[in-house]
Image (tube, rainbow, N blue to C red):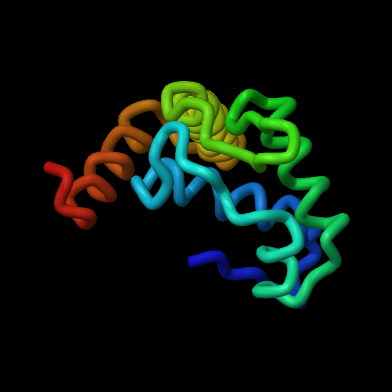
Amino acid sequence: MITLDYKSREPIYIQLKQNIIQGILLGAYEVDEQLPAVRQLAAELGINPNTVQKAYRELEREGVIYSVPYKGSYVASTKSVESKMRTKLQNDFKVLIETCRANGLEKEDIKTMFNQAMKETNLI
C-alpha cells in the first residue's frame, strides 16, 4: 500500500506522510486503527526507523495520528485529514488560476478550461 520513490527529490519521510494521509482518505485506515510499528514498517520499506519515526512525529503534531506510550500510533481523525487536504487543494487551485491569469487567460477562458477538464474526468 505504501510506495516510495527513492529517486525523488522529495524526502522519504514526506512521501511516507503523504502515503499515510492518502491511505486515511481512501479508507485504508480507520479512526483509532493502529498503524504499523515503527521498526516493522521500516523493515518492510527498507528504510531507517528514524525516518518512519520522523513521519509519525509530524503526523502526530498535525493531529492526524496519536501515540499511546508502549502501545503504538493510531489514526486520530479523518476530519482533520480531510480539512487539511481541502485547504491544500484550495491553495493549489489558487496557484493554478494565478498561473492562468499570468499567462493572459481571461476569467471565461479559465472557466471553459475547468469545465472541459470536469467533462474529461466524467464529473459533469
